[in-house]
Image (cartoon, rainbow, N blue to C red; front, top):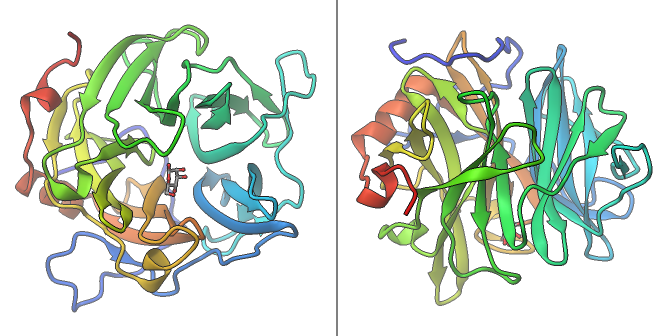
Length: 340
Ligand code: BMA
């Protein structure tokens, strides 16, 4: 392998399925038993989607967006032996503040889960007098301590990098409005302590490519590679029949992630399967996590499908990086440092 993953543990039990021979030019392929999480997965939870998972010891853990029968989303914890079949805890995650007192959000959706050093961080969309970013930490998946909300409303799609860069925590986010946000670019911010955030930089904007011409947002936690940070993100087009959410790929500079080195002009996955095209919100593929193995270069990408299911797709490091580079189109907005 000429491209390598850096600073991530081996995951010998990564879920995997070989690329079907019929698939010629697609860099990524769906698990043939998708969706992996069906409707009504927990009592009083109608749908689980847009959720994040990661290895934990020799098992897997996940934070899941469970939308209740009352239409409100909270985060549920799940455990798995194989990262495909999941057992969920019946009660939603109960957060506390730093004094140990209950501090439950009014709602919580689209969680991401990222380990930095010895701590696991969850970031999600919280009600902070409007949609904004919630942040919490855990070391044992029993106690979840909420930290300061990092950004002012309105904001969504926060994704922490899995290690500090130049001594600071680094987080992607997508400033938004209070509704369904018909615009949006990805920004990056830094913090020495996860309380005070600054050095805000523009990473990349919606592009002239139709599939991501309306808005974009960070997806899975970036994977550190010898080519830069590999980012799977979502891109949205506004059709006459509503939004369509596809998955894109980009590679960010390792020391200055506001600089986009490569950005794939093609989507790498777009709603095609029935469970992506049909559901509570049709035509949504929404990436939130990867499990990846540096030994084999295998990547398992977890995405929400049609706001109804969790689905799984596979790719490999070298072919996906080659594909992104071969189809890369960057603009000045992408490659500049991102401050004006
Ligand atoms: C976005 C978010 C996602 C959702 C998507 C499509 O605004 O709320 O959770 O998947 O819309 O409905």
